[in-house]
Image 1 (cartoon, rainbow, N blue to C red):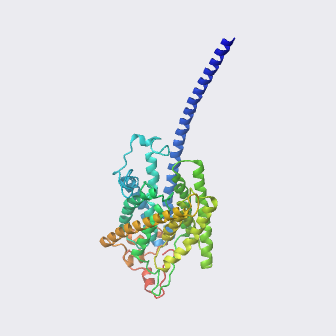
Image 2 (tube, helix red, strand yellow):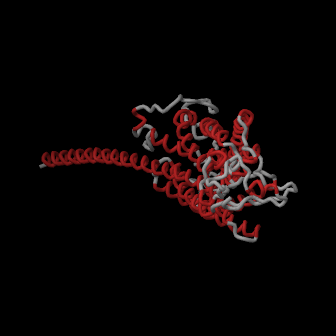
Image 3 (cartoon, one colour):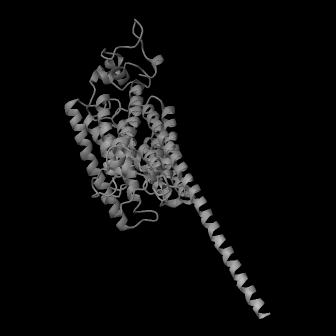
Length: 471
């Protein structure tokens, strides 16, 4: 009996071992299935996020055209169409490998011209299952043109089209990816501990510094400031279009920040989307009531810029903030943007859409806020953030000044006064965005770009103010 009992025990143990082994195998197989599924989900989310960021370029185009005069609408839409196209192409040729050069000295590196992924780069091995090489490029390429789009708004209505196109190509193709490598490419600021989750500084402040340099070198639009120092407001031509633009940008920001998680982690993506949305709403409130208090009337354009200010402000630390911190950051950004717009008007830096205030000033605020709020807050982190802001500011100002300066010296930057008064649609393109609302000559058609028009007559008057919405 004891012998039978012993054999029974041995058989039971063997059976348990077999079952355990088979369970381990099944668990490993299930893990592999889950890993493949997550790999697919990660790629799908990043491709959706890339599409959302792409929509932001339409938002920038409609916002800029809505906040400027109708006579320059075609010119603005043309610039925005060019920027996103040249941005994607230059990023494919040089930008991606300049921004992510691999092992380099931390300041400047280049992995070669073009896109040549290895076979393994399309598998889980490329980025720990986060995404493939092509998904990586597509998502990052959508970011690339944003910096030059910011500049477009600040120099609108008086910059030469060809000169701007040269600047945008060089700025997007070389400056943005080079500076991006300092943090996102594993460069020296990344090693220092500088943190910029989705680009308050790397995208928005870099574009904002370029915008500041461009606006300063161009000078203000004709009629913006009088000789005795008074400000003459130049209203936008289409506030519904501007509003559509802001809401498109708000929508796109879900991809801008949410995609920057670089995987489909439900907890982190959802947190990032919530903090992004809360900051935008708080920025709206901050700008709305601040501008209402200052001007005694509710200002729609300031309120719209408050939404963008909140979005820019939260971008550096969207994955680090709790609900309250996100709302405080957005609220402060909304207040800051109002006073920043007033400040730049006082020093006669003419920014038709408030791009410098939204992207540069609030980008700086958002970057510094990482050291003040959220999981990374602390004095040491604040100092590191300050170093990063200063480094990007100095490098971008010098780079933008060199490009703008060279273009100005060789080609000129600003259109002639007659062309500016007539409008860049006629002067640069020979067409109008709203032809049904344009005055016609006695022989039909539109006035020639070089001919004096009613706007020139208004300019000669002592009490000259800028043209109306449909001028």
